[in-house]
Amino acid sequence: MTTHEQPLDSVLETIGRTPLVRVQDGPADVRIYAKLETFNPGASVKDRIGRYMVERMLERGDVSPDGTIVEPTAGNTGIGFAIAAEQLGLDAIFVVPERFSVEKQQLMDALGAEIINTPTEDGMGRAIERAHELAEELDDAVVPQQFSNPLNAEAHYETTAPEIYEAVDGEVGAVVAGCGTAGTLMGIAEYALERDPDTHVAAVEPEGSLYGEAIGEDREEGEYKIEGIGTHDLETNELFDPELVDDVFAVADEAAHAELKRLAREEGHLVASSAGAASVAAKHVARRIADGDLETPHDTVVTIFPDSSERYLSKGIYRSFEEWSS
Image (cartoon, rainbow, N blue to C red; front, side):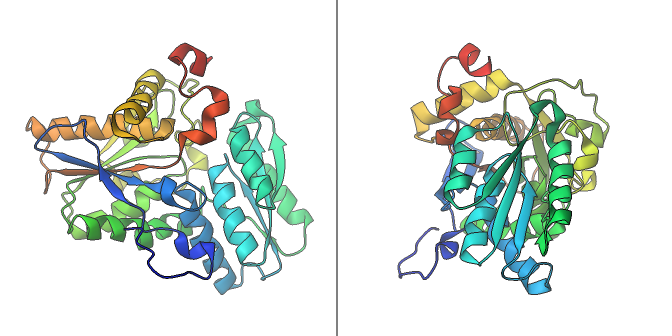
């Protein structure tokens, strides 16, 4: 994993092959492993879809080599697309709701992209609308639309999932991952269930998000601080397939914050709130397996740590919960 022993021609070739590392704070007899996506060049899981989706769209003729990518994004997807676009000869414009990380927006700008902000209160729905408006105004522009494009999930089916299975010799009992667009979980889940239909699949969302409603669970909509996962409008999350999911685990902001701080202090992982939430949920699933409450084909839980805490230092991610959440 991440063993690049020969010189490479492009930063795109460094995407993927990220380490799978055991999370130590779990039941002794149930292994929890996290895929550390900060090892990608743009330091997040979204580098995978940036490269995969842009390459496929160029192959299909959805956009020409000198065209423009226009995408609504909370930040990490923009960074991933910006890296791919520049290396493949495309321009990039990203529509970002104002509340999202300043660090991410600065990095997208550094990578040569144009940033357009939309009001926080209008949510991601307005960012999606604005991206499509911009694409219509430009010649030869395309909206990859990570929230609905099957290439998003396909990227993880073709790259992330095989890497996981190779690393653990196919012994995956449960897959636990946060859902923003849901592409990561859907791609891995499809791959996992093809290999063993008894694999347990759990989605992770913040308390206040509405993914649970898709599988018939009650949810009370509310604001949350965890970034990158969750939804206030299921209609914008077209990739989420409830048929592939056994459980949707809602994590409180405070629990995710406590876990991301523990991961840094005790295990050396500098990860953000979505990883904290994923770790909380993965440990919950592991305890259920250890206690005999959940039967899985293997005593192994795999999760994703999507990005780095360094993207959120300006928001006080390592300060007290009260300071971070205010």
